[in-house]
Length: 131
Image (cartoon, rainbow, N blue to C red; front, side, top):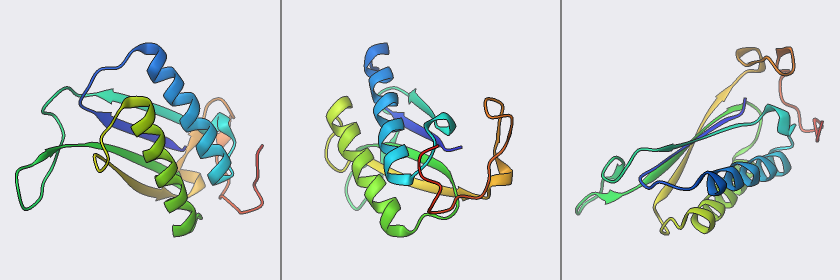
């Protein structure tokens, strides 16, 4: 954890997805004060017509990023991360303004086991910094 899942309606090159994953890891680590070794990014290309945002008029093509994270970050930090991720995805993937929504699900550390780290996560604290 965190697990950041981006769902989009277009297909992108391997290099573009790798670049985006790297940039997501860097920005997440910086803003959320988390070890990059914890971060997993998935980019799901669901195809045209697969994701829609509903409203008063006709549905519009959409994209969504689900962020499963450890509890503890306040709304201001999550807002800063959301804006940074939206700007980055719009730039790298060419998404339209208003197309991407970000949603958070927050978990306690003992709900996330990392094989690479060999343990469950500790609870997040503001002094965690960069490990």
